[in-house]
Amino acid sequence: MIGSGKSTLSTILGNVLDVPVFYESVDDNPVLPLFYKDPNKYAFLLQIYFLNTRFKSMKKATTIKNAIMDRSIREDAILFHANAELGRVGETKEDSDTVIDTYDNLLNNMLEELDTLPKKTPDLVIGIRASYETIVSRIQKRGRSYEQISQDGSLINYYKLLIERYDEWFDDFKVNNPNSDIIIIDGDKYDFTENENDRKLVLSAILNKMNSIGLIDDVEKLQDSVNPSQQQVHRMLDLVSDTIN
Image 1 (spheres, one colour):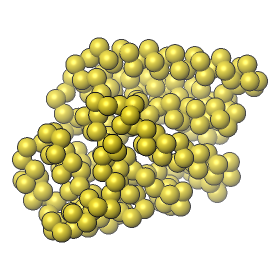
Image 2: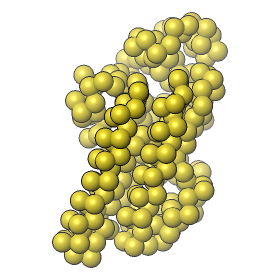
Image 3: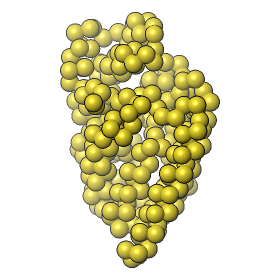
Image 4: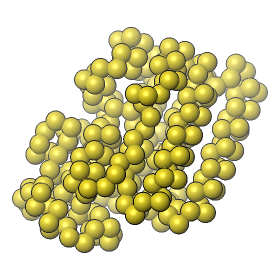
């Protein structure tokens, strides 16, 4: 989700685990400012740009034993279909249906290609649930002018719709991806972007989850670098919704 803190958390986790992080193309994305200026014109082009760069990153990530991606290609459709719901991908319903079918077919072809690779699905997805108020606050703090609701009131509905669609995606993830695990972080309760203690609790919960599914062995050594109390970790695991079964 835009503004949830996924890139910040990816960077922190990458440093702790000493593994490479693949970031979504944002600051070097020439289409993104155009989309915010005229979403009806550029929604499809933006998603094709994102889809292409995510596909490239996924292929590269699968050649590395361990890597982190701050956004998965498997969630790409959330943003595109949200824009379609808002009427941004075609002047008529017939046009919109054609654009949607074209995108869906392209995404499915790419996912089928990824299925031929040694690592077909992510071992663990870390989701961040956050309210509209938290999302907007973080967007304001990072200061990209074209993302601000003060500049474009239509972004209010866009952000709220994305939050709804991500919540649905998180809830359905385990059913649709039985070979992957997921852990959901409460982004309202835990401000891991600025609060050091919250950051340590979130990292400990993630490391415990990774250890429980066999992704890391020396969890105690990693925990020493994070170093919250075990009581806090257990409290965190109670408050963070763990794997969705």
